[in-house]
Length: 311
Image (cartoon, rainbow, N blue to C red; front, top):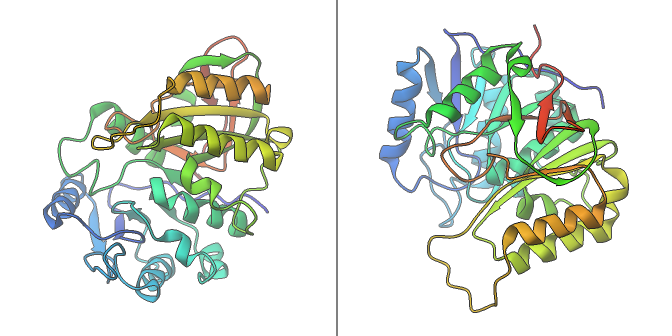
């Protein structure tokens, strides 16, 4: 698939906000996120089902949410599409979307967590580079973390931003590598295995994160990754934040999460950086899904080696 890059986000742009996964828990958070975007100088248009709820955990029926995505891509007045929040639901849409329409109307698309499935499918089917990071109802509803804010607007609106920044972390396994970045939520990514919406992994660098999962569950998912033969295809393996749940009380004996992650980096024998500020926390980076990155051989950092934007 030929890589396609979206255009730079301009200051007077119109941003479409959709809810392709779960409904809003609190409508005031969406309102505050929209207000933030408008104060930044953007015009905002809401998808038809952005405030809907269906079946308890979906922001509208599959048909409603599919139409929102396609209408935003098809509308020439919409310059970028932001997912309001994650949750669950985008995987239900993957075999229903018009990927030809998306391919013919490339534009910035931003989401996180559950939208990993949608971003993976879009890249696999169209080659369009999307962005994994901050969302209006989550990160912009209250004070936008200054570190996250700088990364978010920089990566979307500055073609040379990638030259200014490197992604810092801790060395988990030695070596350097260059490859296409596939980034997202581990739990969601593993549900794509065996489908035509999964990255092919060849010459890729995988960066994963998760939330509310006990170490043994992360161990199980990484074992599944290993058993599919992914390690033989990838050039590098990186880890973001694995955030514990605030409410979950597990009776299973716990093992330090970093110990699990480092073990699998060693089992994979792939250059690896961990503890990257990418995950379900306010201080996080926004990254392009599908552009080339490099794991530095000597420093504990992941470097963006090409702009995710067309100029």
